[in-house]
Image (cartoon, rainbow, N blue to C red):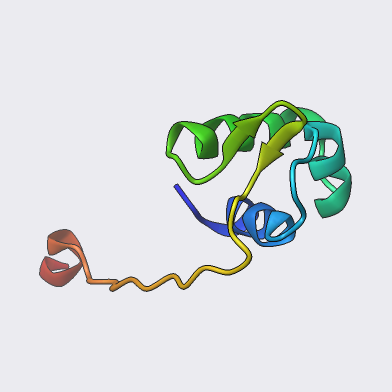
Length: 77
């Protein structure tokens, strides 16, 4: 959900205020359609919020912490 390009998008939007999808795409140097798809997923997940002036990552900073574990199939193989 929050891998590679989506994480870069959120990072670029951090503290930037509301942005249009076009502005967000320009900020990360990506195609507008691809950024629109990512933004839609991030809004649905509650990571970005829709505002009157565009979409926003409403935080100045965020700490991300996670644990990676090998799947059962990797352990068996």
